[in-house]
Image 1 (cartoon, rainbow, N blue to C red):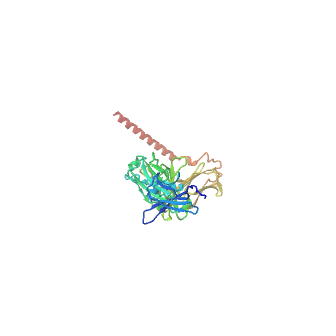
Image 2 (tube, rainbow, N blue to C red; image 1 turned 60 degrees about the vertical axis):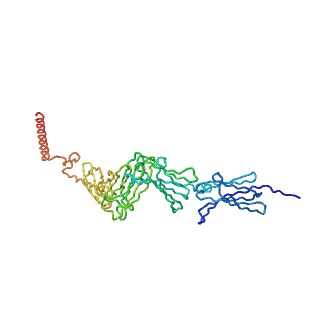
Image 3 (cartoon, rainbow, N blue to C red; image 1 turned 120 degrees about the vertical axis):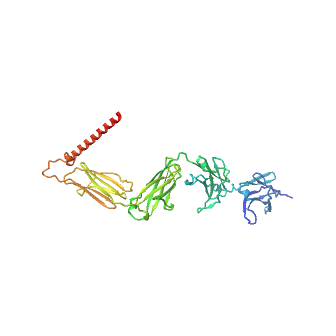
Length: 465
């Protein structure tokens, strides 16, 4: 009689978890250790929690297959708080002298992509930094799953005794979550140069996310300038735009608002961009755009007001009568070697000055200045033309503006037969003084001499006494 002895076969092992959500009991996690295809039936299963024997009561079920091999499952339930705290659970299987173990934890089930997030630290509003109360610092954690992150705060590397307020996650439209944590810092600590740190740590990561804020040393006051709208906006009806350029910012945080005739405009009227670092510099720059409806385009003063920690007083830039449309005024001045055309009081700034000879030929040898803006918001320029003063020549300064066109002309009289040998370059009748002008000069000189002599005599007598 032949007796067949089946050799020992170690089981195939699988370890997985299930979340139990029975409303009648507290949430628990079921850990299941599945063993298949082993022989003989005798086998030992032991559970561990964080490498230590686990005191739970496993539920064991056995089953024999047609191949005379056995299967078994062992299940333990753990509190979900222990599970999400990162505890590691191990299923240890022993058969005869051979043993094997499998371990699982929430971290082993969490992919690396779920362990990453973005962290942002926002300082207190600029208007609060001058107050004596606590300053609110806000930390924003943004990720697809923030449930396993914890947020903590430090002041100069030390965890403070006062606690922060951390709100529940808020679901965003793009599928991410945002956790907001607010921490109040003593204004005296902030002004003294304390470093504020926000730290976000994932349960399964040993590399926390950190963001720091430190009050800048040696802040510099910014430069503020309002750019006038394009001329195309000034001459057509509808809305116009004023641009405020804030440069040389350090540190980067600044608050910008607009005023009209000293009255603050609502924030809905303007848009301010974020500070951007200037390449190769420690300074920042930012812009603010003010929408000016046609109804507000009357004469008045617009102001761009910037508050910055470099000064208790705001930095301003003003622009007046920017939307006033004014025609040019001009004067043509003549002198021995040429003409000067003075143009002033016009707005907008776009203007064209040309010189004509006898009303037809354009002269290109002129020198025209840049347009300059006056305190009243209107513009001016000058243009110089060197001329040879040919007899009978007519020189015209033509000023073309969107409001009107001006033509100012000067000519030199024809030379007659009686004075054909008269050389105007060597004899200028207007420069010869009349007898009346000469005597007036003599009288003024004599009077001035007598006054000086009398003053000297009186001064000498005073000194002698």
